[in-house]
Length: 138
Image (tube, rainbow, N blue to C red; front, top):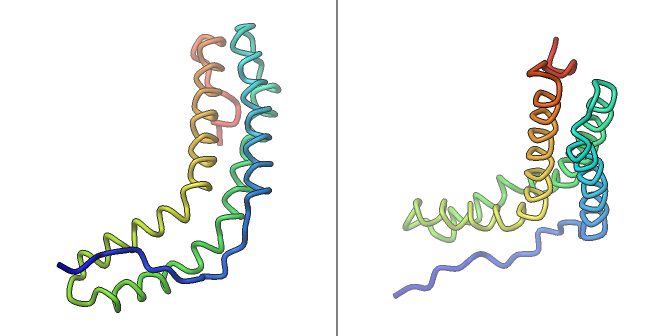
């Protein structure tokens, strides 16, 4: 039986450990602010908008850090297609697994940002009698 494994190739990706830690720490500060609003059951439009924008900054920062991984996507797909040309389904499965592992630390922070944004919006509506936040209006 043939062994199926991820391709070990140096894609020359930057090490963003420090930057991701910084993003995570910033997000934790924003989460703390959210919890203060939730505990006090009070948040106005200005507070909502400011916290929302700060969370978006972390989301944008993390997304930009992950760009080098997006840039190697096609190369990775071709490597897997070539290595596992006998089984395109296996090539696709392994390629997506590998790509997902590379993206995981970035996706984790981005998902936490989206969750906090949703929680913040819900808190605003709960506290303000279902009024929608101003940033929802176009």
